[in-house]
Amino acid sequence: MKKNLPLSILLTVVLYIFVLIYLVPLLLLLTNSIKSFREIMTNVMSFPTHIEWQNFAQAFKLMNYPHLFVNTLIVTVGGTLGVILFSSMAGYKLSRTKGRLSWFLFLLCIAPMMIPFQSFMIALVKVARIGHLIGSDYGLAVIYWGLGAPLTVFLYHGFVKTVPRELDECATIDGCSTGRVFFRIIFPLLQPVTVSAIVLNAMWMWNDFLLPLLILSGTKESLTLQIAVYSFFDRYKTDWHYAIAGVVLTILPAVIFFIVMQKNIVKGMVAGAVKG
Amino acid sequence: MHRARLKRRFTEAVGFAWLTLPAVLLVIAFVIVPFVMSLTYSFTKWNGLDKIPTFIGLTNFANLLKDTDMMKTLGFTFKYAAFVVVFTNIIALFLAILLDSGVKGQKVLRTALFLPYIISLIVVGFVWKFLLSKGFTSLFDLTHLKVFGLSWLGDAKLAFIAVTVVSVWQAIGFYIVIYIAGLQTVPRDVIEAATIDGAGRLRRFFNVTLPLIMASVTICVFYSITNALKAFDVVFVLTEGGPGTATTSVALNIYQTAFVYSRFGYGTAQSVVLFLFILVITVLQLTLFKSREVEA
Image (cartoon, rainbow over the protein chains, first blue to last red):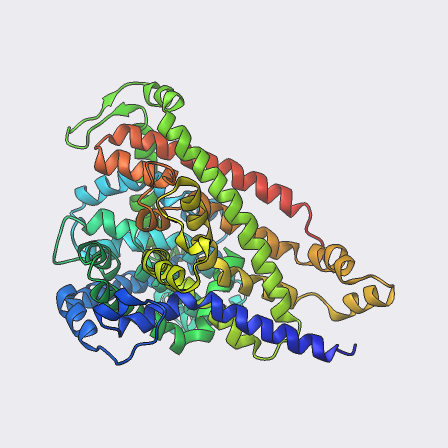
C-alpha cells in the first residue's frame, strides 16, 4: 500500500501541534515556577525574563521537602518491597499447588480486586487504629502490603505457569527446601513480572492520596509529599510562586523515575492492566 | 515407608503454609476484615468514638433513599462517569489509530501523552486550578475570548465540564498505550484483504479493526468505568465538591460523611451502596463486551 505522502505529513504536523497544546498545562507550570511573583501576576503566558531559583529554595524550605521526600520514599519502597516479597511467594505456591484449599486461598487473595477501596476505607481506619498503624509511615507501608497483594498475587500466579515445573522438581530432588527452590531458582526467572509489579505498586503508592490522608493526616512528622503539597498549596494559594515551585518539586521525582524507567513503566502498566 | 511419606507430606504442608500465609493473612487483615466490618457497620449508628456501634437495622438504607444530597452525588457520579468513559475511550482510540498509522516519532508523541498519567491526581488538580484561574485570566486579557473569561470552577455546569476535561486529560495516555498494543495485534493481511474487497476507511474500522480489538475495548471501558465511579482526588482538589455540592462524587460524600461529620455508620451504608453499584455495572459491562470479542 502506498502512503499518500502530503496527507501523512499534514497528519504528523497536526498531531505534534495537538500534543504541544495537550502539554500546555504542564509547560505553564514549568515556566511559571521560575518566574517572580510579579511576573506571574501580570501575565501567566509570558516567558520568564530571568530565572527565579529563589522560588524553589523557598518552597524547599517552607515544605521541609527533604523530610517529606524521605517519608514518601519509606512508604513507597517499604510498601513495594513487602508486596513483591509476599505476593510472589504466595502467587508461586498457589499456582504450583493443586487442590481445593489452594484454589480457595487464591480466590480469597484476588477477589478484593473487585472491592473498591472507598467501600471499606472507613473500617480500614479502625483496623489500622487497633493495629497501631495510624500516624506512621511504616504502618502505612504495612497496610499497602495487604492492599497491593490481590493484583500482584494474580500477576505472579499467571506468570509462574510459564516456568517449567521440572525446575522445581529437580531442585527438590537435589535436596533444596521449598524456600530455597523459590528464592534461588524460581524468583529470578519471574523478573519480567517483578518489573511490572514494582512499577505498578511504586507509582500507585508514590501518587496515592486518600489512604495516606486517612492514615497520616493527624500527624506532622509522617506526612507524605502528596498530603503535604495539598496543605502547602492551600496555605500559599495567594503566593503562587511558592505554590507552583512546591508542585514542581512534588512531581519531579515521579517524572525523573518515568524518564529513566520509561520503557518498563509503560510496559509494566499495560501488562498489569491487560492481565488484571 | 509409611512414615517417610507422612514426613514428606508434613514438610510440603509447612512449605505451602509459610509461602502463602503472609499474603493471605495480609489480605484478610486489610481488605476482607474491613470489608465485612463495613457491611455490619452499615446496619448501625456509630460516631467513631463509642466503643460499640448501635444496631439500627435498615434505617441507614431507608434514610439513603430519602437523602437528596446522596441522590445528587449519585446523579453527578453517574453523569460524570458516562462522559468520562465515552470521551476517554473515543479520544484515546482515535489518537491510537493516528499514532499507529506510521507517524514519524510515534514513541515521542506517545510518551508525551502518557506524562500526565504518571503525575498524581492531586497535583494534576493543582495544575488545572492554576490554569483555570490565573492562566485563563491572562489568556482573556490577551485574546478577549469569552471562554477564558468564564468562571470555570464557580458555576455548577462549567465545573462539571472542568472536572470531566481534567479527568480525561490525565488518563488518556494510559488508554492510548493499551489501544496501540491492541491495534498492533490486528493482522495486516486482514486489513489489506478488506481494502482489496473495496471497503473504505470507515467500513474497515467498524467491520474489521474494531471487532478485532474488542478485548482492548473491554479492558479500557472497564478501567475507565471503575475509576470514574470511584473518583475522589480530582474533585477533592479542583472543586472541593462545589460549587455547593454540584461536583461532589459518591466517594467524596462518603469521606465527608464519615471523617468530617463523624457519621461512620451512615458512611459505611453509603460505601456499601457504592460497592454494589460498581459491582453490578462492571459485571454487566464485562458480560456485554466479552460477548462481542472475536478472534482473527
